[in-house]
Length: 129
Image 1: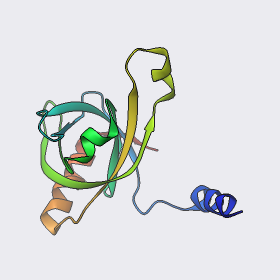
Image 2: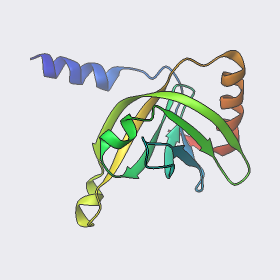
Image 3: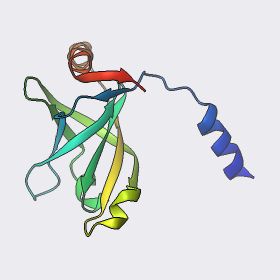
């Protein structure tokens, strides 16, 4: 019964921030543990967080907690994040590598951080989801 209620809440819960799809070539740089940096494709972004696709194990990225975002023209300094979801991508079953979709929530942002993030989103967004 609790699962049904949680599912209904999820369906009807409005997002706090508008979410946008991003232009091709928009990436996140994640530094997981000691393996060096990893560049992965962003799927969508909002003032509250972002989602990206990566291959590997979820535990590897959990060690980082910090991401940087960049395009060919723009870059955004490091932002602290907290993982909200991390699920396998269905299409990855057909390949030898497992790809995952990770949704992250940005941790505290100051006024300058919010302004820079807003400008970055305006530069890279294609349309609202």
